[in-house]
Amino acid sequence: DIQMTQSPSSLSASVGDRVTITCRASQSISSYLNWYQQRPGKAPKLLIFAASSWQSGVPSRFSGSGSGTDFTLTISSLQPEDFATYYCQQSYGNPYTFGQGTKLEIK
Amino acid sequence: EVQLVQSGVEVKKPGESLKISCKASGYSFTNYWIGWVRQMPGKGLEWMGIIYPGDSDSRYSPSFQGQVTISADKSITTAYLQWSSLKASDTAMYYCARWRGDGYYFYFDSWGQGTLVTVSS
Image 1: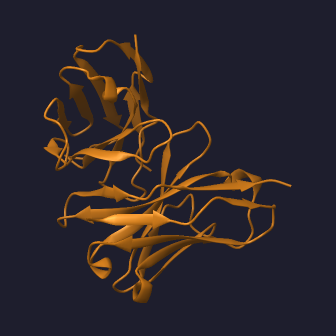
Image 2: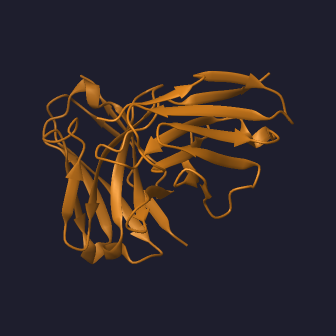
């Protein structure tokens, strides 16, 4: 299985901050990388697919980058609704594993 | 609008069987994969498997192969996840989601609301 490791596991930030979450794959996955947001008690929501492509309706303050083994999700200016847990997922090979999650909390 | 509506909360005993459902609407059910994701209490997301309702082709994570069965009934646009003998460790929230792609890049683009399964004696 391809292992996906996110860092940090948790992060405290303030409204308006710029935040970056990192995801590392245990082998090269080209650009087969998705990002999801999960608010407490809710289903996950797709933000980014193919490493850097926005899902329809996702605000432009979210951006993704990277290829190979190292990827980042950046939120350019945190809004109150962005405090949630973020997951990366590789879609290179079965099983299509998720990272362990990064919980973004209000400072 | 794509909608996935899952069946309700389940409370079962170890050893019992269970089948939970995911009713799809707003798109051509037979033309997209649909999958299941497990989230154990306080934990992260785990990809379980997917099915293509058009021909019932299914793919499982090795961790879940033989532990669950994924099926679909295209006549009622519904996907299912079932267990023949539940264990306490099956206690979790289960999400269905549409697995969409262009042939290269795939992703879960629409999600159900989740079905909470509790297994306890």
